[in-house]
Length: 342
Image (cartoon, rainbow, N blue to C red; front, side, top):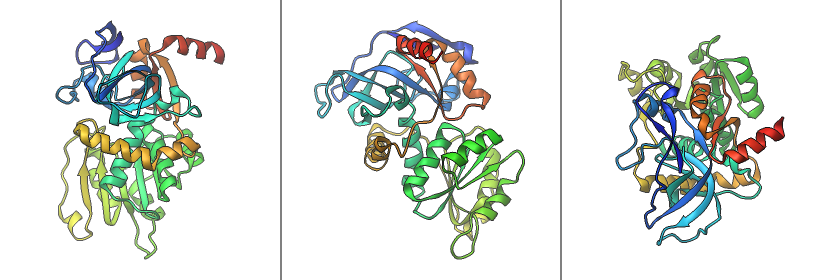
């Protein structure tokens, strides 16, 4: 099969297309013929040598795909060859075939475009597991999400609306601000022009008159740590899921204690398989019906052939995209789509 491999840590040009053996599957897995794969910042970090795959996982990048089931493991039930699926992975998505634990599959209905479905598993699992599972967000509370125009941000806006949560996002341009407002954000802060801490306390007013976000979902890390804690209200919860702004920062413990604020850091990729299966089951039960109805939809910025993985990584690094960038493993489908759009 064709796959994207990393020749050495470095820039996008270290991504190369190679011929790799079609992987075997375990008894509890299925083999998915990949149609499309989502591109995520974790892939960029892996390419740069900063984010190794979990023990036992493939070195081929890619944390989510859509496609069809080509083969079933001996213990798999409830699925059949030919089923359209989306899948959460520990790696291996940048390829024509990938093994997936059956519990990490989501069914793709005929009403959902198979290409677009590739942009859902990782963002829905990440957002839901963190704001609901870790932060226990409740309807009516205020959620602050940094990077409103990202795949995480655009998913968080829609999930917040689905859960009855009020959401404010930060963005770096008016183009992204307008998109987020139209998508359903209650408020948008341009971090290049405004102090987001000050604005959050103006926007996020609780019924008792106190101010500040109840939950913050943060992709920045060290650079925003002190400001995020200041932006939280009493009993606020900060969940850090990225380190785009560095990994080390100092924080006064006193700033957490009296107002009962908490800080947590999590990753999805490194979780045990059992936890990932549980997270996907929660997404299937609580969010997937909204996907099927169209209330939650994938936001796709651009699709590119698998062979253009370096270009896809560059697009994500430039920070101008809104939503997801996808790689199409079935390049005949990508070429047909491009010809149709022309």
